[in-house]
Length: 210
Image (cartoon, rainbow, N blue to C red):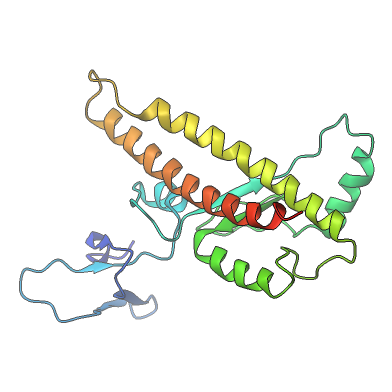
């Protein structure tokens, strides 16, 4: 906690920030523009998704450009190659990462960030439109992997749509904190749904020609 600085509200478009020197017990706000007396000074807490804002700060932002979705791929236990696939996943997957501002990521999950989708699309265009950073020699296997991703993400789209419909409209008997909680949940799910739809549209353009 930083006295007084903690009173500043978040604005995703703000370039103002707080500098803090703990040893000198000194902090200052670096403004991004001129302020008149009485103007509210807004700062950006960070480039956080609504999931992080809600978990760490207790609020969400509509149309958050830093929204992201964590995708988890599970291997069905009835798969006849379950053991081999699990070993390959453990051998080649990204190690678990834990950050103070993000959720802990498991070895069989990855994150899709809205701000990175355009960059990924440009990179894929340089590799014959395919997703892999190092395209496989067997294009059919790579397209099959795309189709698997598309199937998983399409299922998440359906689930998000279902949950959003349960939240809107709010029952008339709800009030106060109950209404607020539903709005926060709606912002979170709507942002994630937007990212999922963008990813789906991109994967469909890759898979359809094949």
